[in-house]
Length: 247
Image 1 (cartoon, rainbow, N blue to C red):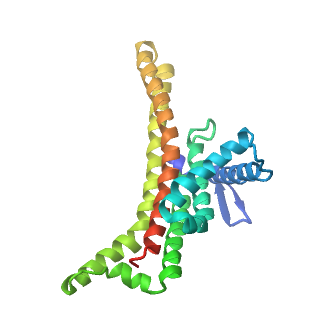
Image 2 (image 1 turned 180 degrees about the vertical axis):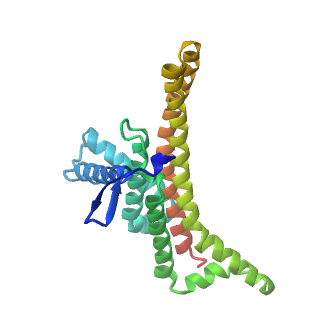
Image 3 (image 1 turned 90 degrees about the vertical axis):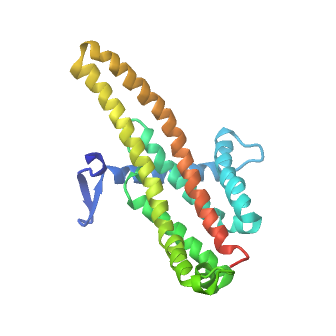
């Protein structure tokens, strides 16, 4: 667990502490900006391999999430923030399976919480922009609810819509990556123990833990992409609920 609380390497301006996970996060941000910039700066009608790869990622967000859930008009309107969230989560996650980094940037609460707040603010902005301040009234007091039940429904909607959404977004992303990292650590730590400490016949168990660790690394690759997709989809769903006509 101490890997999630690394030692401070240096302080920026003497007051902002920087540790290993922060450096991984900085590296992820640089990679996102660099790849998207290089992939889109000189776009060609007949794309090369690198441009095709970037376009495929952009197409997943644009066609598979934004246009599918929000329609073309609202999808294009909120596409920049959805693309930013998708690639940021993806690149922050993938560092957990890159050798010598071996730690996802989303494994500490700062990044998931920041992205959840951005998603939450965008959701509220979309609702107010479309429906004005009636957005809050219609969200808390759905039509068709009997008068005697309105106070109870209003409290439930307040908690589920305006309190739990950023919390669940944060915890879902962070805990999936924390658990994945811990399982990989346990597998490869057990492998090292059986091979180099226990020795003898215990090495056979080391082969098993090594094989399981390799298989789970492949599974973690799927989780890395899936969590980026889920976070972006949920953000789009919340925006869609905010701009829906019933509000």
